[in-house]
Image (cartoon, rainbow over all chains, first blue to last red; front, side):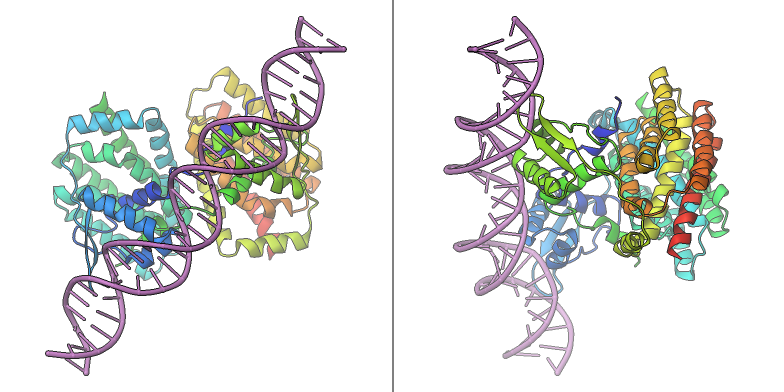
Length: 238
Length: 238
DNA sequence: GCGCAATGGACGACTACTCGTCCATTGGAC
DNA sequence: GTCCAATGGACGAGTAGTCGTCCATTGCGC
């Protein structure tokens, strides 16, 4: 009999503790949750949050240092600081990223579509407090003022802000996960002015529908936005 | 600044390898992926799929044996067999399950709603092969013929079948995860004839829309079905 | 200028997990 | 009746990860 067993009996761990820790910090850095120059949480704090020993966390940080993502300074008011900058787009990079994903590309696109349209709909259906509304508007404003070099990260921040408004930690984690899987691909696409203007209009439509409490509209705007991005991606890959 | 960092810096591991392994097998058993009397994959096979050593897997199986979920027999054509049966509903069980979930209840309900409505919509938008169509129809037929004692498991199987039709392993895993979080709660609700008839009509509507290639209809039918279940749950909790 | 508190850096003892290997049991095939 | 292949069962050596503890560095407050 056909069974969903493959999905349930998938590997319990995505790698060893060290690798998973690297992956998580990379997620926070690449998605722009911590911007260039900002300080990550202290080792003792971060290792506790990630549920990993400080040794393992430090090994992960050292690895990220070697690869130029962060740098650490000792002493009070020291810490680990983000040095990563978004890479320049390039077709070679795009093909490599697509090859790495392989058959997982469709999976990732579908996963993102389901989570983000669902999150937008849920967010629009909730009564939002002033802080939440300001947060969403703020991320939208950041995005509209973005330079090309920081565009992708602020785009991620905006989409994450939508997920945050659902109040569901699981959804936020899922959206972050889905975006991360596509991140290398998206970073490889040239950021053209025409596309940015197009995206900007879609982002405004999303925010407007969410703030107006229009779930159907929020879902539609989000779907259109993600479909446009996916089409752009396919065009560059085709 | 407000950050989605809590979602990204959540614990890397849900527990030790042993606990996670127990959890996964429990998921397969409680969701009815392996029914009463069926044989689980052999230890060598299962440990490889779960990415865990055979020792750890065996420790997990032994633990499940002690709690009466499975039993093992040696020799060729031996193996580990499911002995679990769905528990009887009960209000005490319900309250305990709700307390265990705590603030995670809303999160779990939202997560399930987003994933399952999204999965139904995606499934309806795909061209399904004959095997897929037969699979969905088969799970629906199983459910219509179910006795009260096996109802919840066959219900889970039907919902998982919908997710499988999306072709996205990530979605299947997510749906299984979301259902598992609510499973103890759902099992504690008495299965009344009226509710079953109501659910049956909704399940038929879902399957029909998916097989007819009607994404909007599939989404709507799924949302109505899940909202009804959630309302029932809240009624018993209130 | 001194001290303090918060940070990154390092290490040894301990524990959980893995890996390879072998044993014990069983029922069907011949 | 014998053999065999597939299964669960067990164990010792090796490795990855944790925990507690201490050290080194740094800049602000007094």
